[in-house]
Image (cartoon, rainbow, N blue to C red; front, side):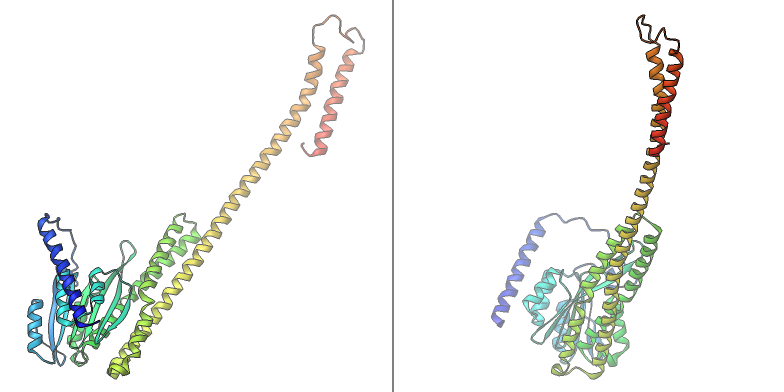
Length: 387
């Protein structure tokens, strides 16, 4: 893209920001959200849209600490050969436009930084490297994984970090680098390595937390907990999100490694970056293993649930069979008892003209008839297994 087109894009972005600012000024300000600060990090205590920390370094040592972006620009121009490291937390659009104009950032990278919600990636725009990372941290109380987006601009003599979440703690990265000036003096790529290393190392406690949740879910599966299916599903979604954060890192680091010779990366720094790549591959393998383990657990849980349902159906069938056998016995005896009742009822009718009323053997015949009918029914039901 030509310089003129880039300038037009920047002017359009600035005009859009001014219009939004005028609309915001005309509207009543929204109530401030209640945010619980993280005392472990100075950057997390800073308000959104502000410069967290800005510093100029020479030979690995801090030589200046400007308080504003304009002051940082001025001091950087007055310090040839110095490196500026500017960290921002949820900056507003005018701040990003100002950075883009000062450091000649590509409009596409600037647009990504403004909109956020990007996948992890690495892009080169001339001499500027644009990196998107997704840091993660494990929250013990809700047993969830919180992901935060981090954008990094690395160019000749500058490093810009734009955080859209509470992690990672870049103040700790800065302290680490300032305590090792021999590494910091290697330049902006050394800072990029330190950030990559921190983000990747931050995956380790997340992996441990997710692994512990999976182990607990496995116990729930074999104990027959009815809520385990929901937990397995939620863990599967977290693992899927974890894969989206870690899998792109492998090709990103391969692309970074491929440019070692072209961009003259220091050999010691190359070793550090290869070490980060090894940790990334290890994390990816662990997360992929989690996905397979959860899939197997879901299958086992479905099998156990089906077995339990089959056992319940079998018990119901056996109960129903026993009830049928009882009904057969009751029905058989009812039929046997009904036969003499029928004969006795007929012969108990008060009719004058009725066959066999005057017969001497009428009563014995009726008793014999009852016995024959009852005996026949008993033999029939017994042969059929009803009695």
